[in-house]
Length: 82
Image (cartoon, rainbow, N blue to C red; front, side, top):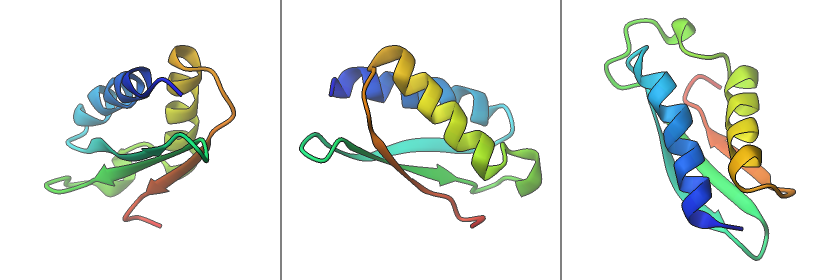
């Protein structure tokens, strides 16, 4: 796992989320387990439903990571809406 590329992929998705007032942060990477943990931040968001739906968010993160750091990863997303 290339952690720098994973970080860049998460930042790419975060840029999109910021347009709706949300943010995304990389919490941890576990190279032994090929696991990536991220957290969706909704502080100050007026409309939670206006931010990517959980399934769409997962897809966006997975696609961005696969473009930059292909691999078979487990994604854990801390989404306060679920």
